[in-house]
Length: 260
Image (cartoon, rainbow, N blue to C red; front, side):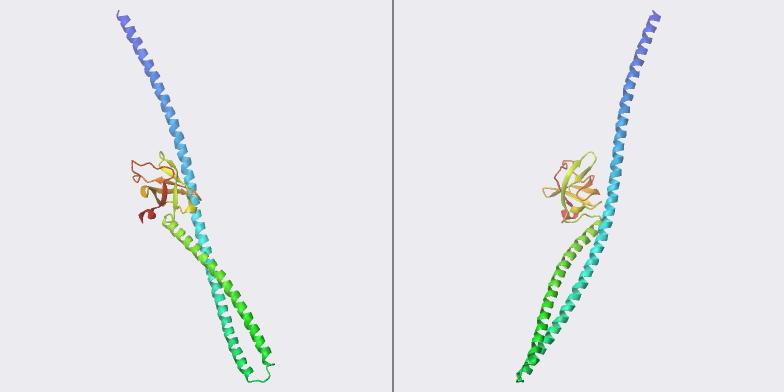
């Protein structure tokens, strides 16, 4: 009887051991699958980080190119200013010549009145008039050139002023005050969004942006990567109320615009 009971207990223990081993094996397989999934996610994050670093380097190169272009435009503006000054000096000189010729005509007229025969004075007066007509033509041509140069100068000044603002904003790590773009896509699990505007619209890397909805700031973003016509930005923790979710189409502006 004791042998029968002992054999039954042994069989029960053996069955329990087999069941526990089977269960542990299933748990091990689940853990392996979870580890593989985590490893895949980590690899994906590494690729994303590498891409963001590349975009950051491209942005730095773009800033340098913009600064060099601004220096070039400034040099062109200085050359135009010199050309304008030269033409103004030329016009002033020719106007003085015209005044002298007018005075000479008046003198010739007085002399002509006292002479019985004008045959000698008439050719002189005619030649003087021709010179004056030519000087008037030259002055009108120079004034037209001066007008064109001034228009070009105004355009370059405006362009230089805008580039100066861009350079100052980039140096300060702020997006342009005129920036007005929108959220393109939202990646809530990753904590970032993509924007439908980039360098061309005034987005500057590392700047802080405000997300507006119905005219009110509902979230803040920090730009992490910028391309010509698109950008990516992290959602600043704590700046987004738990009751609000960002969505595609939300308006995005530079931080100081929302503060004004």
